[in-house]
Image (cartoon, rainbow over all chains, first blue to last red; front, side, top):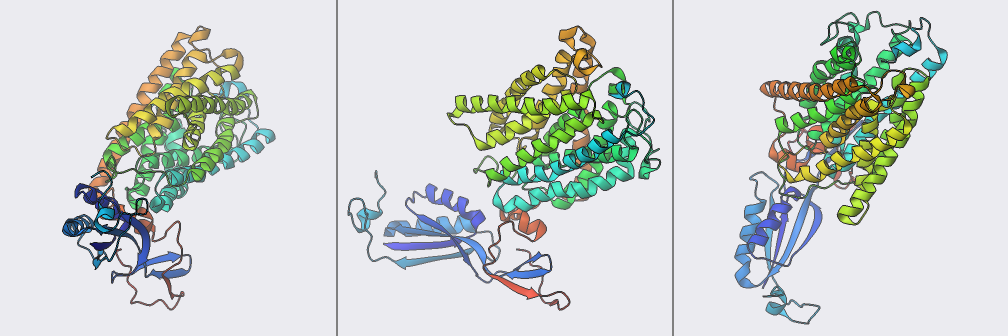
Length: 117
Length: 434
């Protein structure tokens, strides 16, 4: 079991959702985050005040998957989120010790298998 | 159009002038109100750009109008277009405008506010992807080549006015013109990249409601001022501007209930606009009860079109064609049936025995939209030869506010680092292409 974390451009979030759906990956959380990954600073001006926007908006996907799904998940994230410009984001895959489905108490693989399969 | 009634005053009337000064300011307020309405209907990342398209009209269209547009619309000229006698506002002074008892200068300003909002209306078709600079250029050319021509046709002594077309406050040059220009602009600029693929939802329905409410408020100056006086036509138009939108609003509620079981807020905002548009051409010509019937009828084609249009590939984003084009068309034709000499002192419609009136209304309903559509399409195609009309798909994804204006509507300040104060500007800070 792994936890796949993908940090992507907000405007790519819908494409990623579509790609994950097509890769049969179900069960994920997303959150809006702000971060900095080495892209160029954006300059904004409000009257006399000029600011560098150091942090850009990103969307963070968290997807807990069983081992056979790790590669399809990473591929889907990467293919859908890539534009080729600096600032496309990162994917982290981290080991997952335990997973529990709260409703039934199923653990690990059972907890990660979508309902109805 | 009201000329006959005012007995060709050669003196300026204090009452008329006082009212028209206020009416002009009311109409001018409609443009930022429209900006607010449109800004609520787009996604958060395009809020400022959408609003700025209306604000832009206040700048560039006013300049074009004063330099040449007013003259092309309201100098006598020929049947198609006015002359250049009033170019650069020569001879536009304190003496009364022919056929009114208000200063010519004030008449020009009142009509300027009409041209401004009409140009801003067209932005509804192209928001969220059209480049700001290209849109400003478009508005300048369009206000001179399309708006001024249609205003001349019905108000400036053009062929429709001479023939007998009645258009109280702008069914032809404002409503049908903006609606069918929007139709052409949506085709010329093309759909947003995610149109039909993703749900593109309004980000703030409160803006839409407040914008619509302010537009209705301003519309009392728009229609009520189009009699250019405090006489009967202006009063009738003012009251009809209350009655028609109210009926449209009620009918819209019923249609919403029948379709989805709920009355919607954005539907209500739209209904207010549709009702105001419907009464615009007819405001000073029909009885109050006819105006209420018009409010009912105007809702139907616009509602049907708004439901159907998003299923097509036509990304006429904020439904200018439905709300303005179709409702304006309904109002123009309605005059042909329901105009009543006993109320307007000018002409009867078909129901009161004057068939020719319907003929002239129908002719205006054909030729006005045809000219607006063609003119807009040609202008945009010509601009496209010189500069791109829209931003790249990637910029469109990022949002027009950051790309076109370097600002955001809802900035948190998190992660914002103060760069420099004026005078100590660091040369090293490049304006990054985000």
